[in-house]
Length: 283
Ligand SMILES: C[S@@+](CC[C@H](N)C(=O)[O-])C[C@H]1O[C@@H](n2cnc3c(N)ncnc32)[C@H](O)[C@@H]1O
Image (cartoon, rainbow, N blue to C red; front, side, top):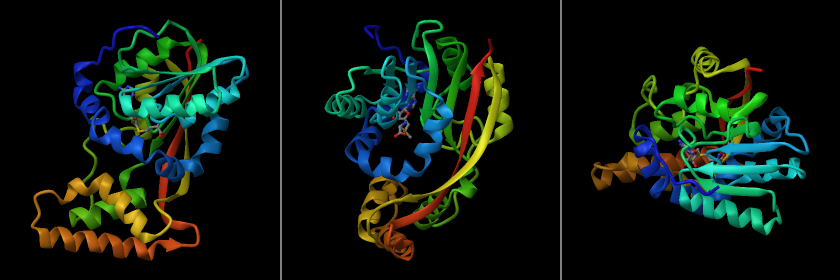
């Protein structure tokens, strides 16, 4: 793809975060993030229904595990991963090349406004990459336009924060109180957690046969409590900013004790719950 990068002004803050520190952390810890989501991968891949000659678009592909899976499922087709993070795309490119996947390619692009070829894809997939749009109505309309009529959309999105043990636990320990309800209409991990909202959004964008299947999987955050502690602090340590050093230490050790309590033979495991969202572009 040789088009100029355009980022919609409503996505500026997300682009700064994902092309900055946050994306850097995901790029450095790609294997840990992939391991955390591994339980969802078989159902996600099955739901995507990718066929051998499909042209697949992976939205918010990150370090590209799902793009590589799509490329393998479509040996006579193509898989294009797009993301806001240069560093995650670098990792995605290197891993696809190392796996010899010549039909996988990657580009830095804003899915909300990128001028995809109309009807240029048979399938659009996104594993926790479609909850961050400043204007989700515009973004999903753009993705519907990129799909051929009848083409399939498959998303993995988080259910409400309250049923995601990992989130409730980490925020409770580090922020010292349960997470507040996610602000409605704001981009973030839980922005597609309300099924009615997802139906309205996708049907308004030109999709039909919208369905949400609830799925729940354990997530592994590290092989032991110390590894998980370092990983979670790297991700959410900003919740300790502004505290006195003593209070920050106290909360950090509270988190370590919680992670010890969740450690077992499979590592440090916390519960999670997601929606497997499927839809088709209106024929
Ligand atoms: C939670 S990460 C998930 C990454 C990857 N799909 C995975 O499963 O590991 C969300 C990703 O969405 C990307 N993203 C957020 N907004 C985007 C946008 N408007 N266009 C393209 N990618 C976006 C971020 O850069 C980030 O890599």
